Length: 302
Image (cartoon, rainbow, N blue to C red; front, side, top):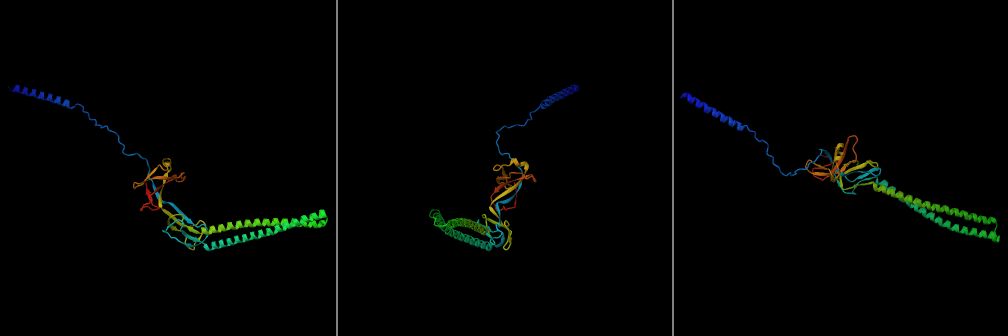
């Protein structure tokens, strides 16, 4: 009886093992582990751009060194550093008294030249009258000698010589009249020059702006071309950048944009026509709006 129970138990165990083997064989089948791909329409979100990081210097677009156009001591200075000035406003005066005296002398020389012309013209009228009288006398003496035999040959020759002498004198007086006219032109030109020098002795502002630096003061001697003031026009600023020569062809005026660190953008308004042979760089410029935190000489990253 016990032997039958043992055989029955062993058979059930073998049957259970066989069922387990069948279950394990079903779990070992390969599974599809590929990721689920969703296909949709491509929507553009950002434009691809290429660029380089640069650092530039802020400066005013318009600046000038107001220089002396005549040599002399500075008589007066009418502006100071930081002053706002308007176009044409007087800034300094150079040697005014000396230049005014030169104008007066040139005016007197012109008056003398005009008086000399009047004198030469009066002499010409006198000579013309003498010439006409000598011409009549010479003709009359010629007839008296050749036709009437009333005078000697010597008398006729003297009358003819006098006529020729008066003719030569008339030509000399005519030349004096022309010379007087030329001297008048010279005197007028000299007067224009000294008047221009007097006008140039007053230094004026070339545009609306602010005085940034005073280089000479009252009493200093200024040569022609010596700057007395430096001034800027703060209404328009520009930023100047130096770029590597390798990027020269990538930059186009009116096309390339510069994006500053604050997010604002500006279009390139200038590109140097050549590359510096020493630094192998070229310059570009962009105009920027005037802002309270912007001053000439500051650096800008872009």
